[in-house]
Each structure stands twice: as C-alpha cells, then as structure tokens.
Image (cartoon, rainbow, N blue to C red):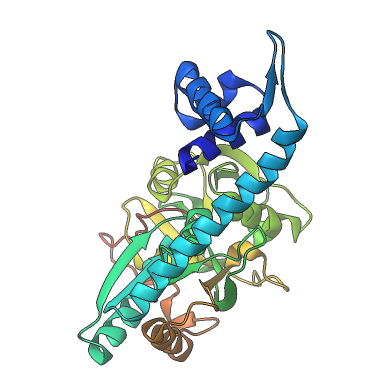
Length: 329
C-alpha cells in the first residue's frame, strides 16, 4: 500500500465513477483500475463493488476511505512541519502579495527589511487572494498580503489598509473637467467592471458602492485585468472605479478623479488589504517583517491617492492625467 494507491482510491470513492476519477487524477482509466486492484490485493479485501452501471463502496471500503483521508492529512502535516523546521533556521523569507499590496506599500517594507536583515534572502510571489491562502496553508509562504480570506482558514489575518476608490474615465468625458465626483454623478454612465468570476472581490466592491446610493451600474464590459479595463476606458467605451493605488501607475488616454464621500462604513472586504500568516509557525524573520508592516502602513493613506492630479484649468494643453497597468483588486 502506498500514497499513490490511497489517492486513487479516495478519488474513486468520492466520485463513484472510474472515468471521472481518472480525469480528476490525470490518469487513464485502465491505470487507475490497476492501482485500485493492487490496493485491494495488498489488503486482501474488496473495497469497491463494480457493475456496468455503478460503483459502490463495501463496508471495508467505507472504513478505508476514512482511514486513507486521515493518512494523507497526517502526511501533509508531517511534510509541512519538516519544511517549517528547516525554514525556521534558514536565511529565507517567503512573501506573497496581491497587486494592490505589491504596487503600493510592499516595496518600501521590503527595502526596510533588507536594510535591517541584509543576510536574509527574500523570495516574492504575486498572486490573487485564494491561491495565496492555499500557499500559506501548504507551508509554501511565510506571510501574504491579501484581501480577507473568504473561506475558513487556520491562518491569522490582520487589516493593514482601507483603500479609497477613484473614478477612471476617458480624457474627453465631460466629467473629466471636474476636480472630484460623487457616486450620484456615476449613475447611468456606461461602466467597465471587473470580472465577477475572476475578480469577485473587485466586482462586489463596485456593486457595494452603487448600492450605497440605491443604484446599479450600467455595465457595458467585464474586464479580467486592469490593462483591459483601462484600454476600454481609453477607447471611450465607459468609465470605471479603481482602488487608490492605481493612481501611482500610468496609462495613456484616461483621467482619474477623487470620489467624495465614498468610504463605506463598514468597509467591504474588497476595500481591505491585510496580512495573513500561520501563527503556529515560529519564524523570527517573518515576525520582523510583520513589525515593519505595522510600523509603516497607514490604515487610510491620503498621500498615495492621485499624487499627480491637478485642476483641469491649471493644465497645460499637452498635459494628461494618466493611469494604470497591473492586475485586479
């Protein structure tokens, strides 16, 4: 009996279908069948009953399913503990971040950490919240900067920043002549919104801002990434809402404006950026980086919002307020 056989058995027991289980595991059905037969031969019992129409678990199979899952959980826990024990004495800090963090406060925090700990290597990865949580739980990251996890996790989470929304609109739009806008100004305007399936935090955040004034956006396009959203705005297809850190980036053909009175109370999860880590993991380098984040990150940072925006009447003819490149919320 080996782990491969156990994984094959669990897949068949959960799917109760050899074809679906084989597809789930990336195996050919005959190869999967051989793994199950080898497991049954090794145990000397039948775990499954098979007919041309269905697959069912025997009583022994039901017991085996429970034990097999427990074995794999213990193996994963042991592997993670060994990795963490090794990393606790190593000179490596593994950091993950969503783009909202890596494009705003993370670079400064990394510079500070490097100056205090020049001998520690930093490994950095950028991803969305869900995969970052998975990497944390698997022991592949030491901490991550992300949105609040949507599913239960054994990771600790602490809010670091509340983002303010800004309005992104085409240079030629009449509202671009105003210094700042309100949500009421945006009602009825054609809107480019984040993808509901790929960027659920960002999508829900846009919906929440419109709900705050009893409206829904006039959605023209759903865009998966910021560059696509900005291209649509630059082409005059609609306007959009973006987090304040986007104003630090650049993209031709668009103007960004402040949104008055748009800090919702309580802030929606999509407006929050925080740090997550596994408290049961003891790692001095990670704790030092956490301390730097707590020292340096301001909960609501007005300094980074639209640093280059000037009143329209003060612009020179060739000047353009430009915006972004990067991923989603």
